[in-house]
Image (cartoon, rainbow, N blue to C red; front, side, top):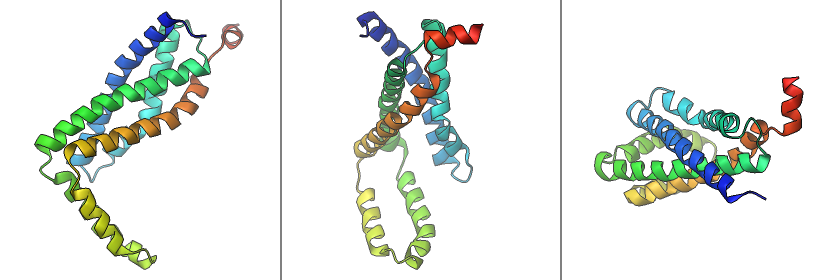
Length: 179
C-alpha cells in the first residue's frame, strides 16, 4: 500500500518533470511547424520515452535511494505524461488560437496532396480523404488541442509500461549490483 506522503512526493516530482517534458514537446511541435523539412521535430518527439525514463531514474535515485517498484514507476510515468499533456494542450490552444493562421492545416493538406496518388494506386477512396480533410479544417483551436492532449495521454499510458519495467529496481537487485 502506498503511503499518502509517498504519493504526494511522486506527484510533485511528476509535475516538475511533466513541465520539462512539455518543454520538449513544445520545441518538437515548433520544429515540426516552422521547419517541416527537417527531422528535428520528429526526433524530439521520439525522445519522449527516453526522457521520461531518464527523469524516472533521477527520481528513483534521488528520492527513493535507488529502489522503485513497477507500480510506482508506472504511476510516475503516467502522471508525468498527464501533466505534460495538460501544459502542452494549453500552449497548443494558444498557438492555434492566436498564431497559426491556418498554417498547420495547410501543412497537413500539402502532405496529403503528396500522399494521395499512393492512396489512389492502392485503391483507397481519395474522396473520403478529401472529406476528412475538410472536416479537419473545421476543427476549432480547443478541439485541436484536446485531440492532441488525449492522443498524448493514450500514447503515454502505453509507453509507461515498458518505461516502468525497465527502470524498476528492488532492494535485492540494488544489493547485488553494489557488491
